[in-house]
Length: 509
Image (cartoon, rainbow, N blue to C red; front, side, top):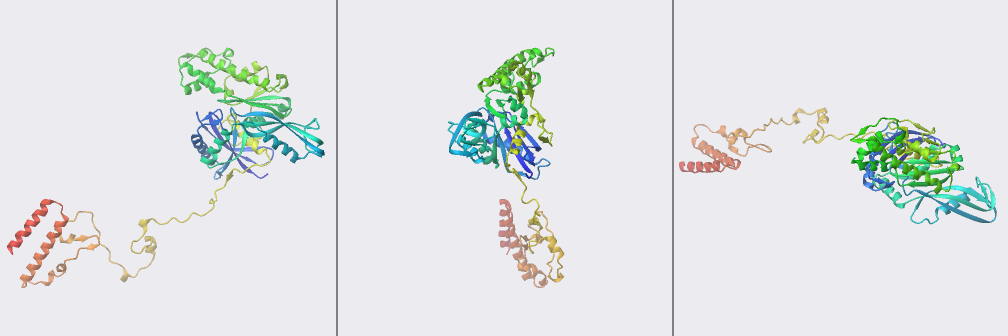
């Protein structure tokens, strides 16, 4: 197939992870270009989004980081595959039988119709996420592959993978409504992880896969190459952290202590007795070990719930998840189960082009991308910006670059030759100082020189012999100056003084 960009998200109780990977063939091999992780607390409980608004904000931050990564930029994320996991995820066995009127060949369409009929089976308040075939029978005989067989009837045993409808509804609110990202499909994270971490031989022999998370522990059992059982225990490594708060630690500090000195089997530890925050480490690890024993006992009990025996799972137990990093937890699981146990590791079908996060911590989100790449139809999750190759529009000149008279940019006007006869005279520079009301040279208004008094330009026409006319002109001009001063000055005493001066001059006449 053509190269496609796959975007995947895993929303856990302690963190949210996102990845962008490239798939170029149908084998499921992917090249992981970018991975981003953001911690969260009390926003997702047991796999269910409790606060869509804050979870959406965290996802938006992850999207921005992914889009800025070399190999992804300048592509924009438009859709994503989302993992589903948590307390409500479980498998429900279902059987469907179809009889034919005559001996017919079983085709792909017949198998699809049977699977669709199984999906339509009423299952109460649960929502079907996926359907996984367990076995097929033709005329009562079990067959490995029904397509191409002939018979009068066909029966199918399947596992319906279900979850609460609210889980999918809240995920849709987060991605589609708040982040503007379409959900290309849902992937059951524990199944995707098991397919990635388990070898085909282990799945055929019989194996238990355990994903030990912060608030939940998922269990997937394979036998005969098909999934036989899936369930989720509502308990995780955070229960150990909360137990440690009984020693008067804040939860954040209890988490740090658990990671630093916590030991699921303290009796096997050869380290000397130490004290942490005023408490002996043996006191701390008594609490850790007690809860670890309980979690391991619950894990082992699910073999009985699947109606299997330990001898039917000779490939043992494969362990994954953040909680599995607790010191000696894997050893405790092997001891109590009496089964061989190993840690899950990144598959050879995944190439990590980024090392921002350790490989064991990105196993879940990369497993989602790998499961998508192995399907027949893969949705392209990114797109190139449409205006990437467009020439940016010319930036308009700022308003202060325009001549108020010519209405064109100053630079453009400067390049145009002008007729000296048509050029306007230069306007004298003006100062910001306050004008003196008694200085004739400062009779200036907003639009130019104050030239209302016609006698200003006629003063030179009077000669010494025309004393009478000159005195009248002088008196009239002084009176106008006083009137103007009166309008400009705001002081009451100045106005009063000007008025008295006027009265006195009238008496002199």
